[in-house]
Image (cartoon, rainbow, N blue to C red):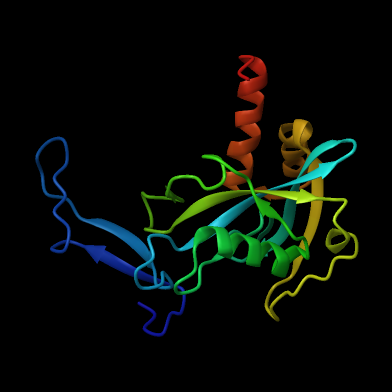
Length: 199
């Protein structure tokens, strides 16, 4: 085990968690734990569904970012870790500005912030809120963007018309990019809504 890991800790749950399988046998489960969740916070971070309000129709803001664990450039939504005492909404607006330069507004109503979601509960405890944000393209702050990336962040932002998201994911995958599950699930959800005419 790496003793000085900064982001995750590999652990083996035996005594700390009682796990009895369906056949009533005690089992051992190996998992990873994120070390960065602030004290008192229910979440590790946020994923940001940023919708740019364009005259041609709504477009989603996506990012290309190299991810060493999969050795691929991944297509993702903007995201980030919450700071101590920070709400999901505040984190989302801050991270959106830092990573992309865009200034956004949290959507009103229940779509603004999702329930807590677990990224890969069979492997780790990492969780987040998805935060839905609109970006007013007529706002002068959204005309000349000035991202404030950290020295270890190499992120390329781009937009895709929301109605074409699923097709674009397929195209990007054929080009060798990895599709983050949050992006793929959103794209699939749009297609399901189209197919079943859910409005």
